[in-house]
Length: 215
Image (cartoon, rainbow, N blue to C red):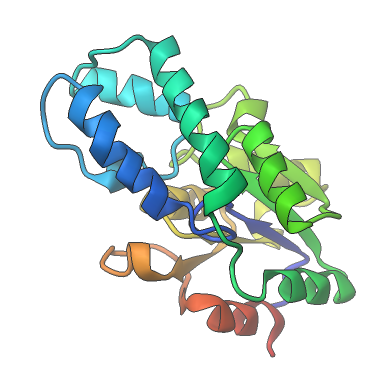
């Protein structure tokens, strides 16, 4: 892969957080926090949680206020990122190889910077060339392309110079619409989803490493 920049999504790619978030959605968000309906996880996966509230409120109605909704997400995140999630197999080695090959390495996530910081510190992912949260931009988040356009610009590149690694349908759409070469990272939680919008689909960390490094 001859692109000089690699932009990693965090949830579902670098850490296995999606099954935990899906459980939280089933147990509270879809059970208690909406008025009616049966949302699908992929409707909101990849979105910033503040935008999740707005989406659910518009589509299904909500039974809690936005501050209550945000507080519940924040509380769940503490245990999830601090204790439960594990790092993608081989992530440390992959990051090292990319740096040795002169690539810029970044995390681009819908999660707040505070959540990303827990993951960075817990798994020693630094140094990173950029860490960008959806909270850091004024434009709408995934599936809109803006967050990846911003990431490329902050690193001094065009999106076409970047590789995006994403696992969710919303995230893949965001990467593709930005113009970046978008790799769909397929593992257990998204095995049944249609990821065909991506430029390339890889199964698991070994195939991802091969796609990004040629090894």
